[in-house]
Image: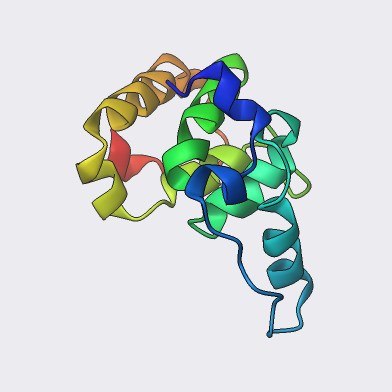
Length: 129
């Protein structure tokens, strides 16, 4: 898991990369650029959902997302019950192949909460079980 002291840093600091000002003028693009400047410890469920859903900072954010899902498998951002889990399970399969420990943890969370998530049809969990 991510070292706690690193959570005081932003994705920009951790990745040692400052993105230029966005050239595509949408709310999502501006938000992602802005969230890269926020210390990891200050990111909320919705922030994680957005960044993970855009495949940004996965190296640092998946562990945090897994912790949040351990606390509440149906953690909810701004859209719907379980939207964080949906974003995490939507991560490219290549990432999971390169990070099998995280895949195992996530699969265990899902299996341990099958009853809780059974009625949530928006979740795409089949590929991880």
